[in-house]
Length: 163
Image 1: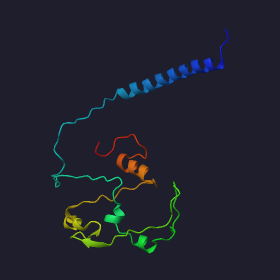
Image 2 (image 1 turned 135 degrees about the horizontal axis):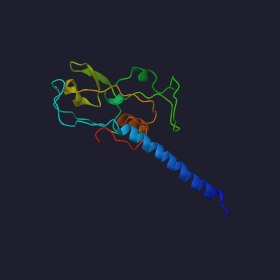
Image 3 (image 1 turned 180 degrees about the vertical axis):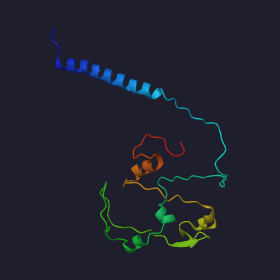
Image 4 (image 1 turned 90 degrees about the horizontal axis):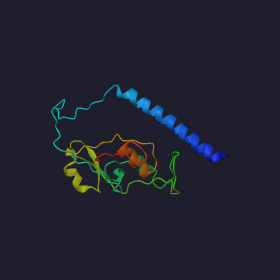
């Protein structure tokens, strides 16, 4: 009986797959010796909370924070000029010119928070607002940067904030 090369590879692959499965199951059984338990019952916080509620706004496609709360003096300085630094990463064929916000900014409240004329009523509640300004990413395009900020990974398919 003659066996084709394709049949040999198919049979060998099943053998390799079986060996890999046996190894993975063995690894799981080693980990199973240390049982993991999670106590999900409500418990008292470490300190008395000051915040009564949180409203998380995610505005994909909304106005840029640079146009609302984040004046950038250097953007004004280089407005309309070629970017003075090298931009690395994905380029979709768009302009590499610097574009400043078209809105003017003023400081408001005891916090002195900068707010643009785009958000005139925000000045009334600015001292009751918290800004999280610690998010950074190495992603240069919006979609993967959003995935990175909301899921911790630059690709789709993972649980995100609020899920």
